[in-house]
Amino acid sequence: MNNSCLGAASVPPTDSGKPSGYFPDTQWTTLLKPLAKRSATEIETLDRLFRIYRPAIVGFIRPRVRDPQLAEDLAHDYIHRLLKSDDLLRMDRSKGRFRSFLIVSIKHFLANHYEASATLKRGGGVVHVPVEEHVDEISEDPKDHDIFMQEWVNAINSEVMERLRGEWAAVGKSHELEDYEPFIWEKKGTESRADLARKHGLTANAVNVRVSRLRDRFKALLREVVAQTVREGEVDEEIRMLTARILSPENEKRR
Image (cartoon, rainbow, N blue to C red; front, side, top):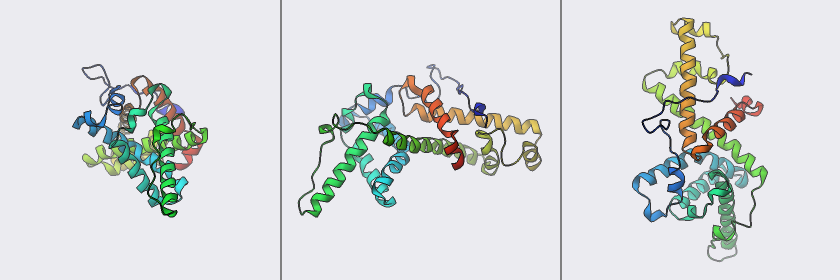
């Protein structure tokens, strides 16, 4: 496999000098703002952020509860709690990326869930264990991080492809995208470029142009999505990490 198909994306800058769709440190500013002081736009921004993270959160919870529907329900409750409380104020930017906070926070949330369930079984009332009481007591398990990272890679790739498919569907080209998708990550697809040219009534050069533009658009959308989830100076590093994991032998089997 040639890993050069998706190099660093070059996205046209806006008038502000930032790539289109870029959310510099706005995300962190919003995350660290008290609930009562968030504007409607900031609330919408956080909703969008957690929509991207949700599949990874569900995937991280699922093996711990061994019940797919319960995992969905717990993920919903967890996200709702974060968005409707000031728990996010307890994050420390100096301790790592937002997902590092999520990993520990989810484990705290599950501990609360299990404690509440055990208390109910004993006949008592629901007990809540405040997250802030255990922030310094629970260290991040490297295995947990790797599990969450795999779910995160899948979630980002799915989000980008969903946006890409939506764009092609909007112009009535969904059927064509299915033929070109394999070329996003590979030099060769399930059909040769010559076969695609004949199939769609195009020249071989026109197919090459479409593949090139598809890759460029994928890279631009990847940058947009990633820029909503990490700090400004971490975007390129995050993209390199995501690309390396997507191109890994383990992920290759899933594609």
